[in-house]
Length: 341
Image (cartoon, rainbow, N blue to C red; front, side):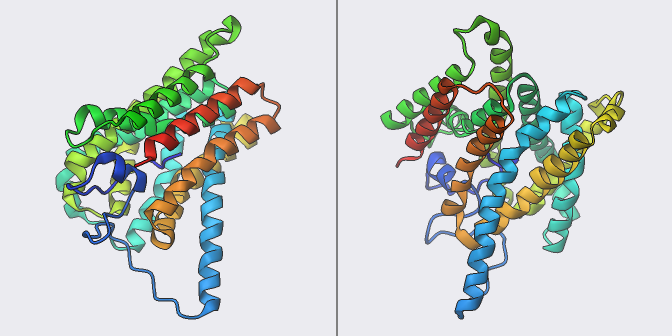
């Protein structure tokens, strides 16, 4: 899925939201100004160094897909012991430190950025607190594999917000068909015809959709108010998670957190798997892929997590049926059509 995230897309005023969404984050059109403030990769002349770089990119690409895809089983295990809001709090707490250290290492973090604290506050709500809570709540009600499959529908909801609130965005017939097909897949994952599953599944799907809509709103907000600030992406992510952590410190209920100690697997899965890796390290891996592969190729990693989540669910004997796989395929098809020029 998209990183909480990696939500700071870089858009050109001369191009549409969907075209930039296809690039996902970090770079403008060829020939345009490069906004993503990363250090340019060194010019590699010998085959040995090129081979090492290719290997690292390969490992980062598939490692990131596996990390994102496993997030849902970690949330599911933790949800048996603590509340969704507590899951979000511990996730952000554990994920903030790696991102902070990364931004400091790159020397891209400045206290002068705090003059825009109100923008960071809005983004922390849309792209961290509400988004993560919606996914944690949805995963607690759904099978982890189905929750992961639904995460693949995020671009559909981003596009809907873009069409509604960005004047330069136009919805073609092909894109509209893609949205309809993708949304049909989302509806089918709720099992509306099975009374014994429908109630919990509908609530879970609606929670996931709510989180996805929050992400969609964050893209539009970033386009209008964040991108013009020209703040490095690693710094923006640090401020987003930092402000999100402050909000969660205030609104979280700390009672019952000790129940996590009853299951070391759930505890370490949440702290290490979902927090340090699934939130913190995931940002760093994604930035590395942007530098080595480019925005277009790096964005294809988002197709991996739903497949990984379904595979993990099937391995754990979750009751995932043929209809669920068909619905996931419809979501993939819808997103594919949405990205067609």
